[in-house]
Length: 349
Ligand SMILES: *Cc1c(COP(=O)(O)O)cnc(C)c1O
Image 1: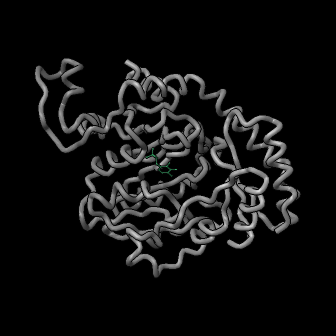
Image 2: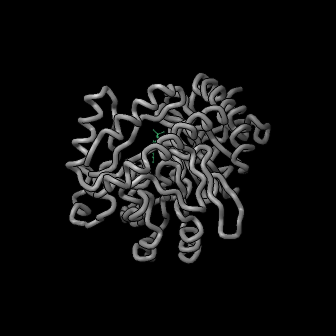
Image 3: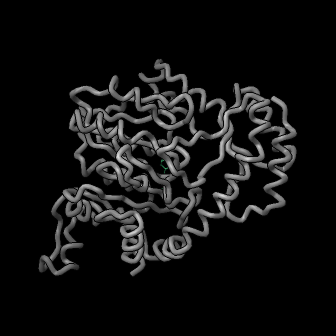
């Protein structure tokens, strides 16, 4: 069974007790939301500069979101803001490691421990990316909190079209997670011969992907190092050949803190303002190169922004307006890579 093979590969690669493939990372986070029993009245801390899926699974269960701003040197969540957002109703902190670059997990886990708060990692972009703790231990992202999710959507480093995985780091969640995964039934225990028939025992949904998706994912996972090496080459090439241009034009390139080992998921540029970014996207488009901005701040969203739109989250708004991503995929040829670099270098802010 490919699903089982993928579980074994992921559990050994990530060094975690249990993983469960899901139809998406969004679904993996929905399972996390059910597992930690999110209810109306609970509060969840989520960075505003993220995808809907970081907040939606908790909002669907009735939680109120407290939006955190990003760091000023990186789009990841600013760990210094968390203590101001914590109160007696805080049930979870959702950590998003933007571009596969780790947040400061030592500090976030410490804040959470204090308040008896669950840490859920939205590690959607993070397959292969790591974090080294203050005590010098290395972990893959998604394996540091109580629960984590990685995406295998076609836009991510490793994919199966649509897919994801729930990472269970706290063993107490394993048996209930298997039930939630299987439509609220104890079918997993039945297959193991632990019960003689299976039935409806809890809440849940059909979170498991088909064997077809798992088979596709299996081949991808077998080649993870090939994909990561090709991406690293491109990421490092951009970094090296755009540094001088960036300094001259007041552009910020990605910053990777010492504790993070990233997975070359995104190479981004941060422009001084929205106007120069718009001009840049047009300049690149004229050369036949597609460059794209990224998230619209969640606190300004149509769905959730009613109350939160009045908030000021200056860094999240800055990344919404000023960040742009360069082409990055494993079979980008050297010739095309050089053409992108030359085209960027030809732009003046
Ligand atoms: C891609 C992404 C998701 C969604 O993943 P799906 O597998 O499409 O559900 C969630 N969060 C972040 C940060 C993402 O980049």
